[in-house]
Amino acid sequence: MEKEAYKIYIIGAGVSGLVAAKTLEKYGYHPVIIEATDRAGGRLKTDIVNGYQLDHGFQVLLTAYPSAKENLDYDALDLQTFLPGATIFTNGNQKTLGDPLRNLSLLLPTLFSGIGNFSDKLKILRLNKRLKQQSLAEIFDQPETTTLTYLRQLGFSEDMIAKFFRPFFSGIFLEPNLETSSRMFDFVYKMFGEGFAALPKAGIEAIPKQLATQLKQTKFYFNTRVDKVEDGKITLNNGDVLESHFTIVATEASPLISNLKSQETSWKSCDTLYFETPKRTISKPLIGLVADESLLVNNIFYHHSLAIASKGTQELLSVTVVKDHNLSEEFLIKKVQEELKTYCDIESCTFLKRYQIPKALPNLQNLQYAVSLTETRLTNQVFLAGDVQLNGSLNAAMSVGSTAAHGVVEALGDTVNMQAFKF
Image 1: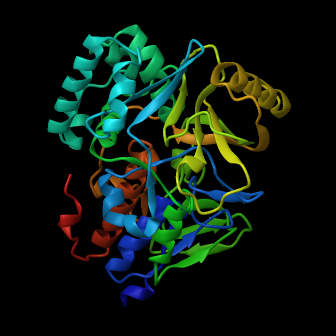
Image 2: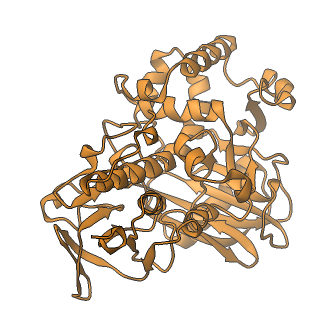
């Protein structure tokens, strides 16, 4: 059979599914991607509202991600980089903490921030040195504990944890108690140290858009929901049945595959609220951290501190809430505005849009950096991809998408290029 005649379906047009399709195309196959929504991107979406560019949740690309460097054209994305630090709102004051070795303008603010003590600074240097020497595979082979326990084991002061580590990594892990695996902490910390946090000028959706435009032999079925996946066939919600030689499930598989029904993924949720404001309280491209555990607001960012493709008439502010709450939207907005005024000196902000994201990040245990080809294979004809298979990062999504596709290639008797697996 000719390669283009094989019926290979990919469920989900997020970055994992797109990279899977890209990999299959490299070997001459013509996959079909089935997507439930109206466009590719998965959790990476961007809307234009009143002229403002709003990502579905505050998200960044870490430029050091190995899979991102392999699959994305950074120049074409026109990446705008954040400064390597953060502005911290604490006790009515605004402090800046950052890495002066990477940006000299952060030296004096960091020295006089009063965040942490001299011992904390030495421990950060030691942590930086150790992680620089460790490979990503070695990081994920380490014993696992919570990030909070790990930071205490490393000897960081409670002040440093409360005012920097907790709000900063709560915004990344989308949970307020630093219960996320210490492996993920080391991985993310290393990635921040070896590259930059960045956003495409056109917003986070520019990433899946770029991947989609790279596909030349892939068909898309949008607004198409899958009900069930079995060996040899896919049943759609409308009752239609598609015959398949192989299927890659690049989304949560448990609702689609009968023997996985009891293995439903647990998810972390968050709220991102966008406001327009007349001015910025943080002038530089730094994330703002609210270092008070009693508050709803965890972190803020002024998006026009970076170059941006679509700008409204005022400043654009995003606010991230990671705590669970049962507030109505009206009361949530009011509470957030009150906290911004009291703790961040933001007097005037007009609400634009709220993104309530119930499935923002998978809540996983025993995090892994990579899987083998055979580990992505669930049955004879069904393979699994998506970041839920590894560690809930953009890097993981791309990595396992590629691996699952290589698994299909191998199952078809093709020779797999093992240079793709340099862990």
